Amino acid sequence: MPDAIELLKSRRSVKPREMTAPGPSPAELETILTIGARVPDHGKLAPWRFIIFEGDGRLRAGDIVAGVFARKNPNASPAEIEVEKRRLTDAPLVIGIVSFTTPHPKVPAWEQELSAGASAMNIVTAASALGYGACWLTGWFAFDRDVLDGLGLKPDEKLAGFIHIGTPSKPSEDRPRPVLSDIVTRF
Image (cartoon, rainbow, N blue to C red; front, side, top):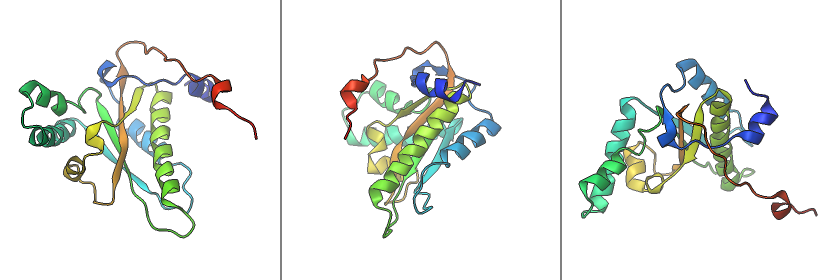
């Protein structure tokens, strides 16, 4: 297992199309989700939950995405609809991060949404620490209310993203990172 600082310094996203099986075992998935739930959460509100897409569940979710896409794009070709159907099928595991807020006198909604984002990043980091490739993505369907309803989200819930997890099929290339002098100021 890599040193924590080295892991954080070298972590990079792996494109889902560059992932293959195997995905995490049930015990590894439990570890990943446990780490996903161990984030800053002022007020102990747990303003997030997880949806697991694996096996045929990825295909059923794809049917929902493709159905909404076809209905909203009546001139879409069968090939375009098929692309939408396969959105969650490249990686063997996809975790949807659902975000919701609860009115609270000391914890603003923005802070609760940030907690969901922290949860997503912890999941990415945990999967990476276990040796898997991981990628946090959204896409049009993560913001489409009809898709969200079809995936079982409540009207007051949003999708912070989909975390795709699998075994990298090739080494992942790094991308340019911000130069610290461009993004850091001192007060």
